[in-house]
Structure formats: structure tokens, C-alpha cells
Length: 270
Image (cartoon, rainbow, N blue to C red; front, side):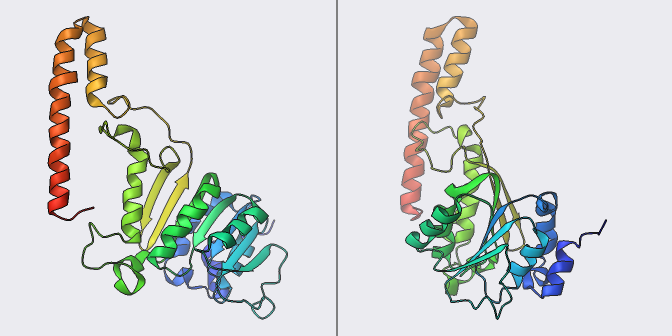
């Protein structure tokens, strides 16, 4: 039986910078258990083709689809393999992405190593995440551009800017959307669809899956309704707890909401 090379060894052989950046050791934690499966893997950004060759060897039973805004000479880059498919187009071109989805269907792994521009990273996620299989992984590389204004990032307002890092930071709220005690909560399209988000040095991993476990603290995003239901059914004293939770606590929640909105307006946090 031939011993399979690990991902770092393959990456070193093809001279892809994924090893230099330290990505391959992180990838191996997620991919080792998957490497012999028959997967559909999409990588955004081909450049010199070295990473596609790396994935082709590592996932030798899988189909590796690469897209790039530039025309790629697959013969010159030695990408003319049976399990590699190359397409030219922009990662934020909805028509092009829809063509790719129409051709290949859903994906098991999506890796964004494209432009690293905020607008492209976020738009690509919106376009492609719905077409990631459950338990699939969406990975974004080179997140350091989020701290660089020349890439549409923001090095001066780390907490409140609309950078792509903050997009993924805010996405973590989708993990706990059931627990948000805001009776005016507006459902987000990623609620119940993300089971894990992991951050590494310049890397983000988002795992898709069913996340619909009900909260033990709130009903329909209302702490007051949960406590009223719990206390009144336990004691049979509905009137007392109606006044406490349905009146007093709801007034408190409304005041807290108004205070928060005024603070956001004054601090220009929208």
C-alpha cells in the first residue's frame, strides 16, 4: 500500500504559497478525513495554477473546478487533467457564477483565493453559499486585506467598519440567532444554516449545516413571553406574571431598544 503524501508535502512540490502562508497545516485538519471522497471543490482564483494541481493530487477522486477573471492557458500551466476544470469569469459576476452552478450543481468545498477585495469576497459568499452542500466548507483566504484600505478594508475602524472581516464576525451571530432576545428581530437569510465559524491567521472557515435548535431562554425572540409562559403555567397565577413580564418587562425592553437606537444614531453606527 502506497503511503499518501500530506497536503504540505504536495503544496511544497508544486510551490504553491498556501504552504508559505501556513494554510496547509490548517487545511489538513479539515480535509484529511475527506481526501478520498468524491467531492466537488471550487476554487476562486487560479493565478499560476499551482494550488489547483495541489488539490488535484490531494483530492484525487474529486472534481476540482477553478475560476479566474483572467484567461488561463491550461496546457502551459499543466492543468489539462481529467479532474481539473477551468473557467474564465469574475467571482462577483452573478451571470457567470450562475452558469458555473448550473453546470456543476452544489459544491462540497469552496475556497475564495480570488481578488481579496471586500466587495468581491462578500458578493461571492452571497452568491455561492446557498449552493454549498450541508456539512460543506466555505473558506476565505488572505483575510489580512480586510485591514488594508487599498483592498476596500479599513485599518482605522476595526470594530464598526463594513470590512469583510467584520462581515464574517457579524455572521457569528447567525450561530445563536435563536437566542437573540429582541421581539423586533428581523430574520437573516443565514439563520439556521451555519453550524460553525472558525478564524485562523488570515483564514476563515464557515461550515454549512442545519442549526435550528430552539432556545431555552426565549420564545420567538422574546424573553418576556418565555418567562410569562414558564411562570404562569408553573404557578397558575397568570395575572401577576402578565403584569410583570407582559407589561413591566416589555416596557423595559422597549426603553432599552429606543436608548440603543439613539446611541447608534449619535455615534453614527448604522
